[in-house]
Amino acid sequence: MHAENRSPSVFLPSTASELLELRRKMPRATLWAGGTGLMSRYYPYPYPLSRDIISLCNVPELSRISRTERYLDIGAAARLDQVLTVGHHILPPLLAKALREVGPSPITGRATIGGNLCIPDLRLNLAGALSLFSVQVELRGDPSLRTQSRQISLNKLYRKEGGLALKETEVLTRIRIAFEQGDFQQFHHIGFPYRHPDEAVIFCVFVNHGESSISDFRFSLTFPSIGIFRDKEIESLVISTSLPLKSWEIQGASMVLKKTLQSYSSRILPIQHAREVQAFERSLTQLNTRSVSR
Image (tube, rainbow, N blue to C red; front, side, top):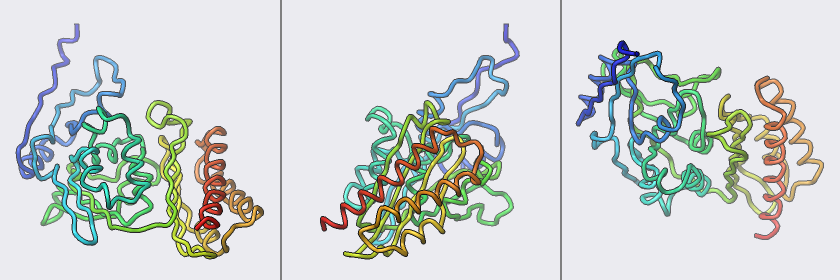
């Protein structure tokens, strides 16, 4: 009945050079790492595009994890459980929680860090958590560059209007995370980001503080089908206050957040507005409790 729809071909490069050459020849092919994201999506049959598959599983370079005194370098095809094992004592707690909450062990045992970051139409746990840290990603395969590789900040991997800021032949090959210590960190996903992205919110916060002052405050709100929201003005507003925060200061920061989000995207649903405000206010209240109990 659908004789014109051939089965996709699967290519198994064993080196990064082979991978990049295949990507150059077949820029529309699907890159396959763990496959957890791809296998969970619904695609009607017959699929309108005949998508060949380039597997990343046999490229050793993409699965390597190494560390120095300052950085953790992770190959894009490294599994999430590998990252958790290697980084058990050095990962920021909110990032470790973001990795664990991707799913149960059958998922984290197959899902990869690059796959989680590069779903074209969704921003999930790792993108929101990593947006708070100094993270560089390596992209390879740009034919206009002599070295065919470039390093960019993770936040520049995503376009403001959505989607990935990757060139057609590029592949994300490596992620570098700088080590940082924080006094107060939280990661929460509210709702079901993968199954119901239009209703879910992912909230992350990273704080450094003394007995009565906040020296560093960062937070992100991820709306899975829209993007990642960060606001330096709100972060500076919280940093300028003393601990413990007064109730009116928490409410004031929350009101600024509400107004800013209204201009950020008209696609944010009321349930998401309610969830993000609740998460933001709760985190500041818990920061108060933490600072008093130190």
